[in-house]
Structures are given as C-alpha cells and as structure tokens.
Length: 98
Image (cartoon, rainbow, N blue to C red; front, side):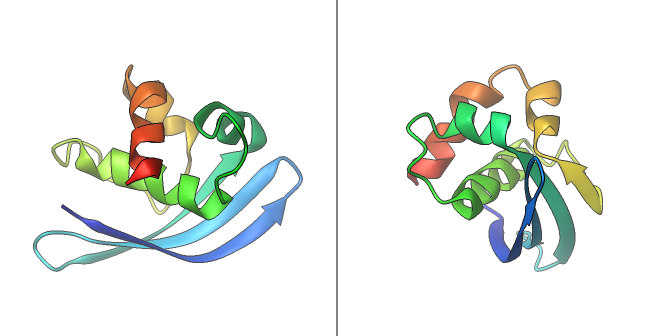
C-alpha cells in the first residue's frame, strides 16, 4: 500500500490546503497539493475531532488505494473522491481510523 505524508497545511477562507507526497509500491514519489473544504471535512470527521491533516491523508490514501485507477493531479480538491467513487463518504472515515 502506498504511503502518504502530509508536508504542510495552510488555512484557506473555505478550508485548508495541504502539500503532500505519496510513495507508491514501486518506490516512486508523487508530490501534490490538495484543498479540503470545511463541508467535506465535516462530512468525513462527523464529530470534528480529527485533525484536518489526518482527514487529508485519509482522502489521498483512499484515492490511491483504488487499484491505481486514479492518477493524482498536481493540484486537486478532496471532493474528487466523492465525485469519482460512490463509496467515498463511507470509506474515508475508515481510512481516518487506521
């Protein structure tokens, strides 16, 4: 399974922006930036007790776990998970718990 590391977190007017890197099973590193809205954070961290960076890590981990069918863009929004995969709202909280 790929390893995800959040490198930085910035507050934005409607949420956060994260710089991250993903180390895949072949040893390649992919750098990316992801925005996370308050609305998506509240959906995936229902009680609001999870650190935003932990939610961001879970979203990226979820995306890359999907049989590498998703190539991460250099910059994307976390809502990509919900748009691409019907079970994202159910699965991402499970990735937070890991």
